[in-house]
Image 1 (tube, helix red, strand yellow):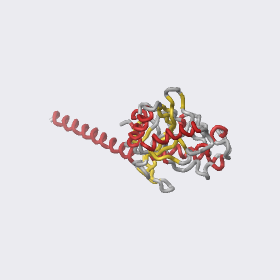
Image 2: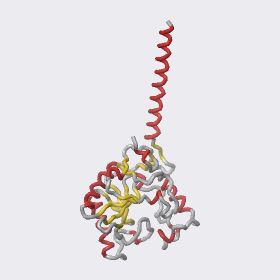
Image 3: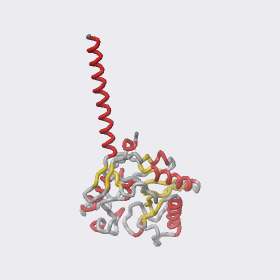
Image 4: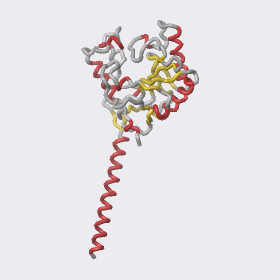
Length: 254
C-alpha cells in the first residue's frame, strides 16, 4: 500500500512538472509572436523568426553600426541597438549575398551602416528631432539646415522602412586601396548632397555611387531617391509590419 501511494505521488509530481513546462513554452511563444497596433494604426510585431544576423549570411561585409556608437546625427547610442551587429530578413540577406559576391569580383566589399532598425530607435529619433536645443552633431550631419525643419520636412519620420527588416544602409570598401570608396558625401548627411543623382560632385564620386546602385538594383533592391546609401528589397516580405525586438544576437537565436 505504501509503495502504491509513493508511486501515485511521483506520478502527480511528474504531471505538475510537465504541465508547468508546457505553460512556459506557450507563454514564451506568445511573447515572441505577439502583434499589436500602434496608436496611429501601424502593425507592430516582436516576432524575429524570419530574421538573421547579416554577417553570418554575408560573411564578406564590413560592419560600422553607427547607431550603436555615438557618431551619428543624434550624438548618443540609439535605443534598441544593444549589440554592434546588423539584423535583416532572410530574403533580404539572400539578395544582399548576391550583390556582395558580384562586387567582390570587382574588388569591393560592402560596408554596412544599418539594416533592421527597431521601432524604439525610430521613436528615439523623433524625440531628438523635437528637442531643437540639442544640436551637438549639426556641423557633421546637417550644417545647412535648421534642426526644426528635420521633422516637418520628413528627414525624420515616426516610422521607418528599416523597421520592416528588408532595408539596408551601406557603401563600398575598396579592397585594393584598403579604404572606403569616396562617394562625395557621408552617410546620414541631411541635404541634396545625399541625393544619388546629385551633380555637384566629381565624375569619379558619381560613378562610385552608380557602381553601388547598379549592383543593388541588379540583385533585387530598390533605391531611395534622397539617399545614395539606402536600398530596400523590392519584394520585401513584410510590407505592412514594423518590428520592435532589439538589435542583439539573442533576438534571432533559436
